[in-house]
Image 1 (tube, rainbow, N blue to C red):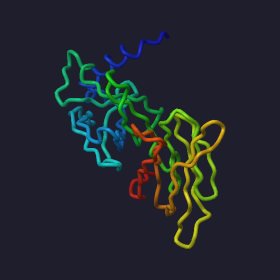
Image 2 (cartoon, one colour):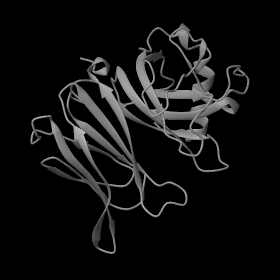
Image 3 (cartoon, helix red, strand yellow):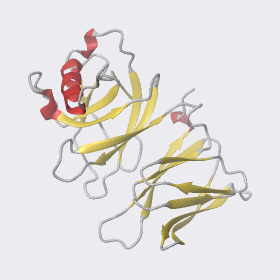
Image 4 (cartoon, one colour):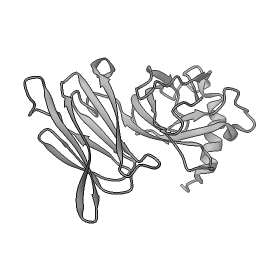
Length: 235
C-alpha cells in the first residue's frame, strides 16, 4: 500500500474530524497538555471532544492542564487555531498534529512553537500517561537543544539526547527529607558544562517532566520543570 504525503493525510484527517463523532470505532483518548513557549506563554488553541464539538484548550502556566478527551484523527491528536472550523477547508485551522502510539488511552502532550513563519504554527511531543509507561516517582527529560546533555539526579547519571525524551528512574539515595541534588549539563568542545543545579524532593507520589531548552539571548540552556502529583497518575 503506497503512503500518501503527510499534507494530504492531514487534509483528509481534518475533514474526518468534523464528523468524528459518527465513527464509533475510533476510541477516545484522554490527554493533558502543557504549553512550552517562552516567548509567547499563552495560546488560543482548540480540540474536538468525543462528541465532535470544538472546545478551547485551557492551558495552565508551566503546568499540566485538566484532563480532556478527544477522538484521534487518523491516529493523531489534532489541535486547531480557531473554534469555527471550515469543513470545506479544515487544513486552514490546523495548529498542530502529532501521531499517537498505537493503543494509547491517556497521554501527556507538550505543545511547542513550530518554525517561525511556517504552518502549522505549533508542534507537539507526546508521552504515554500510564503507570506502566510513566511510573510513579520517575522523571522524564525532554531536550530541545541541539547538543548532547545529561542529568544527574541523586544516584542516576543519564545522557540526554537532542530532540528525545529520556527516562530517569526513581531517586532512592536522598536525605531524611527525601531531598537529592539534581544537576544538568551540556557538552561543549568535549567538556561537560553545568548549567542548572537544584535540590529537589523525590517522593513516589510525584513525577517530573524536565524541559531543557534555550532562551533567546541566554548564554546557556535552562530547565523548565513540570510537576505531576499522584492524582494525575493513571492505572
